[in-house]
Image (tube, rainbow, N blue to C red; front, side, top):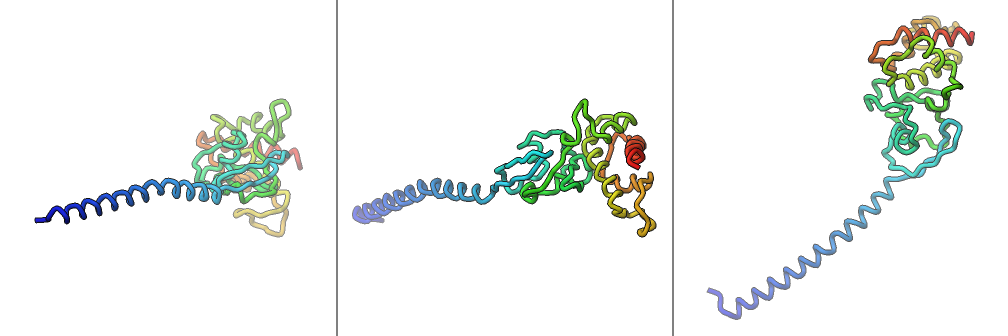
Length: 212
C-alpha cells in the first residue's frame, strides 16, 4: 500500500504528464494546417492555352483533366463527359488540329496549345460544314455523343488529307481516301449508343465529297 508521500508524487507526475500531453495535442492542428497549406500549393499550377482562339489562363489542381478544365472551369459544356475512361469518345476535342480524348489528358500538359471544342467550330446561324451535314443527314438522335462525333469527324478528314493511314489502309503508297470503310475505322473510337452510325458516315462522306 502506497504511503501519503508516494501518492502525492504519483499525483504530481500525473498532472505534469497530462499537461504535457494537452500542450502537444493543441499544437497538432497548427502543424497539420501548415502541412495542408503547403500540400495545396504543391498540387496547383497555372496553365495558359488558347481555347477556340481565345487565350485562357487557369490556376488549377495538377490532377485536373482537360475535360474538367473545359467544363467546370471554362464552362464550355458542349464537350461531354461520358465514360470518363477514354472508351466512348464523347469528350473528343482537337488539340493542335489532332483529336484527343479530353478525359485522358491533364490540363497542365497543354501549356501553350491550341484547343478547339464544339463551340469553336460553329454557332447557330453560322454552322461548320460538318455540323450542317450532321443536321442534313440526321447524324444524331439523343445528341449526347454528337459534339465528340463532330470534332472527331473534322479531324478525320484532316488526317485523310494529310495522307495518314489507318488500320484498314491497304496501299500505303496511294493517297488516303474517304471511303466508307476508312471512315468507319477512323471513327470507331466514337460510340453512338442510339446507333446513328450509317447517318454519321453519310454526313462525313458528304463533307469529304464537297471538299473533293
